[in-house]
Image (cartoon, rainbow, N blue to C red):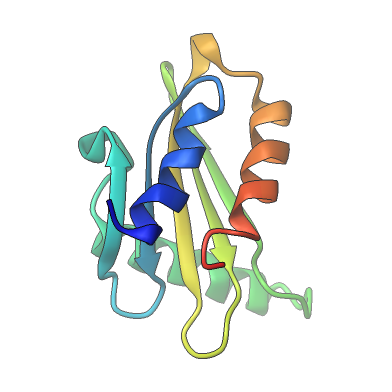
Length: 119
């Protein structure tokens, strides 16, 4: 198992997480996915949607960078978190089952794991 896949697999230990992926924020290239890749979605679509939201945040005059996006549906939470690094930013994408997830706790654990995903 590659080091990146092993690192991403740690996300699956968070209760309710059904899939996770690491995506290039500019190109949409998915570097690695674990769990249910269909639930995580397409990297290109995720990068495009995140770019639109980032533009809107910038237009709002906030002056800060986008940290995360949370989309809710009847059965899932979809979380997209920016992972800063030298070069293009990366997106950490996770799909969570709403019935098995405490969203606040899951976000806290995902944030903690995100810092080490490239370590």
